Length: 124
Image (cartoon, rainbow, N blue to C red; front, side):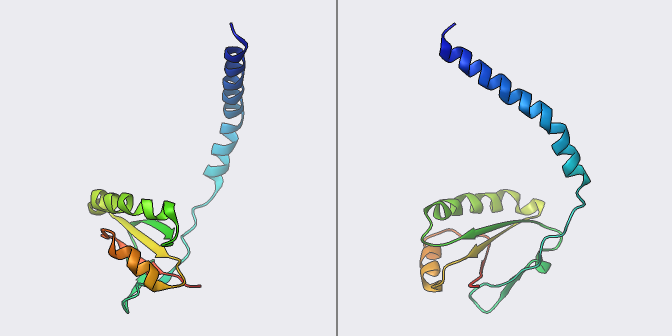
């Protein structure tokens, strides 16, 4: 057997051993943590309305932070629209929080997107 194959098998076995050794402790630690409520938020939607956590009570909230100058953020918008379409009837609420300091840049970006979810802005 070549050395590379031996090294790869040794690495895999070591990784599995580490997972097996630490997984029970991690599961116990997670089980012991009491659930904590999400911190409240109150955001402007840029059109004289508010987006609040309270208004979404009872829904599963996917909260995304983005900026118009961020390439990975730009790529996430079609996926978020797809998830909103797919799971809205099951209670999903996607909220995208814009972090641009210049809201006109954010609006310019948003005009090029299909938005079917809530947009809020946090300039702080």
